[in-house]
Length: 291
Image (tube, rainbow, N blue to C red; front, side):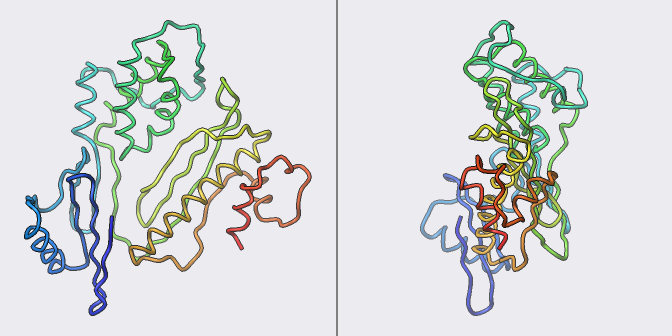
């Protein structure tokens, strides 16, 4: 992606390139049309007009509103795995369910399982509601059992009932970046590692999210939450830099909401705590950024 800014009239042009797919937007139609003409003089290109479909994502544009979804792709997944007529379920996973490598269940076809998880991973481009469980199940690509496979099929049943879900962005007066961070503790049965999760909102909708196993084994819930908050802060720093490149620099601080008081206190209090000696030095980035 690249941006250009005209010094004369403060106009901006944003170009996003993915292989041979090109998206162009800007502050004025004249600037966009000029760019298109210049590109077509050099390259053989087809102007498809207003964006309605891009890399499997459907884009519905209305007055002061954009809605992104993968309705068509979700239907293709259901058809591919013969789940078009399945009974929908209200949640993507059982809240108390724990997955592990050796669960005693019969192993399933790894190729089929990988294909299903791969399809679901691409669906998370607009479906943050299935991000967590897809992240969990992706850890068992090489040792998938019937339990893992049935859990993946449950996601398909959930998708069947929420097939029109997506992300809606509406025009707002103030664009304020803020994020949310959370973590479980010793959630992975196999190695006692935790799963971090964060998401960021900018204006009217969530646009960035992640669910990932932590690299360290936390010895307390406070440490697990602190590690997750650090990951969220790193993402916030990158987003703020990207926004600066897009000439949308955020002057105010970015709030990261954390629901663990111990982690908040450790991040805010400059006094060294003996109980936190086992924290890696890099985790103190969170405290440094707040200054």
